[in-house]
Amino acid sequence: MVSEHYHITLPSLRENISRIEPFLRSIPCVHELPENVYYNALIVLTEAVNNAIIHGNACNEGKDVDVVVNVDSERFQIIVTDQGTGFDAEAVPDPRRRENILKDGGRGVFLIRALSEDVRYTFLGTGMQVEIMIPFPPTTPSP
Image 1: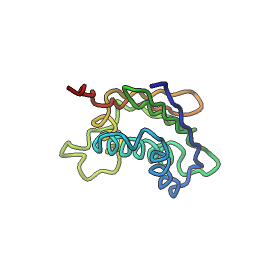
Image 2 (image 1 turned 45 degrees about the vertical axis):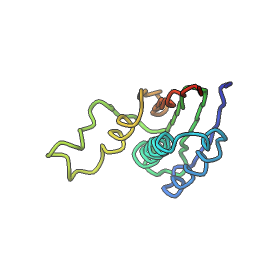
Image 3 (image 1 turned 135 degrees about the horizontal axis):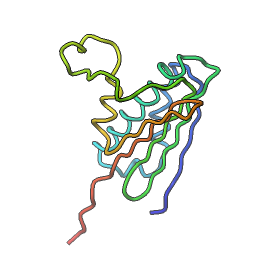
């Protein structure tokens, strides 16, 4: 399979988070994915965009969130970029710890890490970028 590229730019309004599922469903190969891979990709992408809109861009509709999905035969590569001031992903408290259970924040970063093969956060100077890899399960050859 040749690598395919899909892109959407969203103004930083909370209601634009609802555009993520139709965007993901518009990618042709998504309909061939095992259900668990599709839902992992949907959760990860939704959480990354949610974080970019709400935390990165502080719901400033003058700032955009850029979403790129690259698909090849082995994986999804999801890249979400905001125009915020950035953060230290390693400093986000573990939401499973007793002292953090009732605190706001941290769950999106946790879910993204838990449902992905590889996650990289990079501050670009003009915004934060998260690059996420979600592998497809290996295919079993027919006998």
